[in-house]
Image (tube, rainbow, N blue to C red; front, side, top):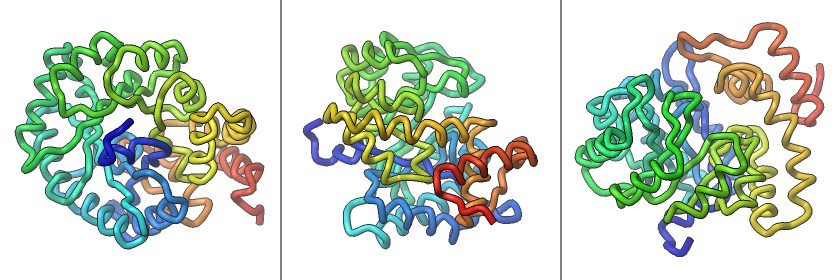
Length: 304
């Protein structure tokens, strides 16, 4: 990667949850999450998207969330901590409104998935991206994300190559499919940088050419994730040990739908409340006990 304005794509980008208190945005809690990320000098933060329950946010809430994230990033970092907003809307019209609000509020880039449930073909995805671009007040870099477990659409290497060639504003691609062979194929086929979008796949994808990752476990141990990515990029033998150390936490955050376990973990650590928006539910007692055991074994939680 040579463009300085895209250097934030290298390394660890943490996908933040959206904190809620009694059904409304808990912006002071968001400030604390961002301060923690800035202290560890993460490359960027992602708000909205799947981890941020972006599907549940009202259009005006998007502006509030992004504006607060941008302000928090500026206040808490002595470097240029970038803010990305994840667009997950089904309707291109609503996606355009949401993206515009994020752009006006100061987002540095947009992460955009194929519209879930709609199941568009490749020309439809291209039209979706262009509809969003047409609504923006100024040019913003786009990052595509392939997450078929969420969207129902698996954008393979050939489809992504067609999308990237048709929409030059796409500057990177995030791949959340858990297959190492896919990472190798994408790294060879795409003319833009590749990001890992599944914490289980950070090692394999970085070893096969990804420049960084959008991470969920980075909410809990941002420094360790950043060190792991850096070691894997350099083919440092220390990467194997870091990967093994992270694996139990990565698995613990998959006990049920993201971000429910993450919010439960952050609540156990006193960082946020575990509130999620319907139809998601908080962890049940069994899930919470198992998660807290994992946090204790990782030395993040001291048992009472």
